[in-house]
Every structure is written in structure tokens, then in C-alpha cells.
Length: 475
Image 1 (cartoon, rainbow, N blue to C red):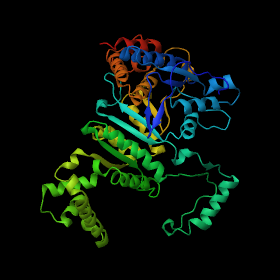
Image 2 (cartoon, one colour; image 1 turned 135 degrees about the vertical axis):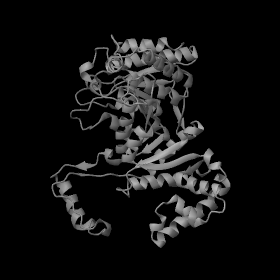
Image 3 (cartoon, rainbow, N blue to C red; image 1 turned 90 degrees about the vertical axis):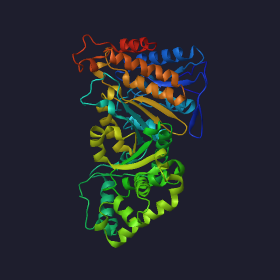
Image 4 (cartoon, rainbow, N blue to C red; image 1 turned 90 degrees about the horizontal axis):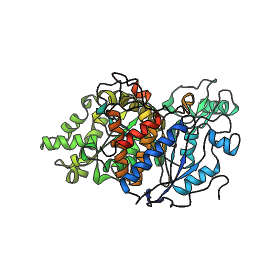
């Protein structure tokens, strides 16, 4: 079955039904150690995860770990440029849930990014990145504890699909010629725009299917949260890219108001309903004026559209969402991408789940992680309908490899996400409790220790931090 790897002799595979995992008590979980500091991070993380499972379930549940290869370690085992062997892909497909340390960017071999390749090959369309503050973690922000968001980033489309051509290549020149001479002139809204002849060309595909399956997962997640956190914000640059990022927003609202009609309300709908509740005799025009402050400056056609919107909302959902019922629904709104970068810092408590496209999500998740303590404490998951991979979100830091000094927090918290995904909440809660207590007690690795006031001397080693987390399970 496999060329160079052997599955555990005990344990069962995770299966899936309707996109959700069915997890046995002894699942076989493939793991990729990772490059660089992965040699330190993975043993520490595995120790914490195993200890939490044992403490929580007293032997009734146990993970059977299955070592598979990717990155530099794969090249050592399989040969030059074999960064992502078929053995590994087959094992992840077969067993359904995997976890990985950081991976290097390949040199040669035809793969630009191992992380992106794993996501695209397995159709792991939802990158999920929680950003939550643990008390005591050094942060440059005054109130980092106010930020508690989960970012849903579409993982398989956008410019990260990697369809691009080098400047001066035959295909790039041909595309520029076709666009400049045929397609742009045939589209009146583009006016006299032209692409410079010395340009590289990339394609930014955003599909309705890809957008809605991502937003669907985000709304489903919101429904599992406490009522005060049931909000999904669509993050986009639709004001500029109307047919890609603007379409993402529109498809999100379409999904929320059809498939999730009974349990969702849009922000504009809530304004219309609230105006009617506070002023029962309000006219359609006055309601329209309240939800659109520039109403009086609109053309008569646009004013009619806003009045029609008000009328349609009241007719369609007043009985099910009016008289305050909308306050019990998942709120769906949207924000322009550049403004959300400010607002996660200036108004963080107003947001819960952020759903966005690939490039925006990459930037936004790293920015949010910085608010709560940096990528060293940032977990990540890549989830599809029949597979999920959990991962450290930082790089390989090869100069620190083998020194037992780096922070395993990102990979450990990714393990927490994996346990939660599997439904093993008791074990996940133990790790979060232990991690929080260790940080609060200033038992931390050098990256956190040097930023604390006063700095912690000496800091814990990577392995010692794992031991400290475990020691706090029973506090």
C-alpha cells in the first residue's frame, strides 16, 4: 500500500458524513514533524496532546500517531525534490485528519509552497485561524484581551491559485495583446485602460461555489457560539474589485438570506426592522432615509430601489424576524478589507467571525495574531468536507533548530483545534487551561520571556514549556 511508511497496528481511521468527522475512540492520526524547529516543536506538542487525552479520558480514548513525511525530511527519505511524496498524500486522504509542523519552501521540484499544495490537493477550502488572547502574553496593544475572533479564509482560489505568467513570456505577451486589443475595448466600463507591455500577468478567480462553501462553514460555526458572538463579517475589497471580491460579498448575503434565512439577519435588514420597531408608523421613505444617510442625494431611480428594499424586507421577514426576533439571529454584515485592519485594533470587541478570500485572509490572520501575541501563539486549521490538516502557522526558523528553545504554542494550540474538531473538548480544555496558567505564571519560552516586564530569566526550554503546561492541568 505504501512505499516507505507503515501505519500503526492499532487504531481506526476517521470517516466523514455530510462534511463532519466521525471519530473512533482510537483514531490513527498522520503527523508531519516539520522542517527546522519542527524537530523540537513536534515532540513537545505530541507530549502535551497525549497527556491531555490520557488525563481527560483515562485510557478510554487514545491517538495512534502515524509518521508521514513532507519537506526536507521527505527528501532525505524519498530522494531529491521529493518534498511531498505520494505516500503522505495517500495517508492523509485515507485517515482524514492530520497535523503538521512548519515546512520549508521547496527549492526545485515544481512545488511553490508545500502548505498551499496540501490545501489544494486535498481541497481544504477553509483555513480557520482563531485569534484569542491568553492572559499574561506580551502584546504591543493596550487591551489585547478584547480581540477574540475566528478568521475563515478561503483556501483554494484567489491569486493563490498560482496561475500567472512571467513578464516577457510568450503567454504573458499573448494575453496582454488579447486584453489590450480585444477584451478591454469590448468592455465599455474599462474605458481606455491598457496593460503595460512589460507586465507579468496573474489571474484572480473567485467562484460562487468556493465563496459560498467557505461562508457556509463560517455561519455554521457562528451558530455554535454563544448568542453574543453570533456574527459573521464578510471582508472584501468589493468597492474596487466588483466582480471578484464584490461578488464574494454578494454571494455571502445570498447564502445567508436563502439557505440560512430562518437563523440569519443582515445588518441592513436589522436596521430596517429596528426602525419599524421603534417607530411603528414610519413610512417606507423615512425608513429608507434612515438606513441610507445619502438618500436625499440619490437619483430618483436609486431612491426607488432603496424604498423597494425596505418594503421587501418588511414583507419577507417581519413575521419571523420583527419585534426583536432578529436579535436572536446570526448577524451577517460586511466590511471593506482595509478598514477591518484598523477595526480589529480600535474596535475589536465588535467582531467575532471574519470570512474572507485567500489573500485578504493571509494578511488579516497574521495581523490579528500580532495583536494577541504573535504567530508563535497562532494556531491554524485547513478543513474540507472529507479531510482536515492542523498546522503551526509560523515558519521553520532553521537557525534555532535542535536548540530546544522555540515556542511550541502555535502547534500545541493547533492540536487543541484538532481535538475540538474531533469532539474531544475535555482534552482540548485541559490544554487551554494549562497553557493559560503557564503563561500567567511567567513559565514561558524565550520569545515571550524577553517581552515580559520584567523579562523572565532564565526562560523555559521548548520541552520544559510543554512540561509546565501539563503540570497545570489539575490546577
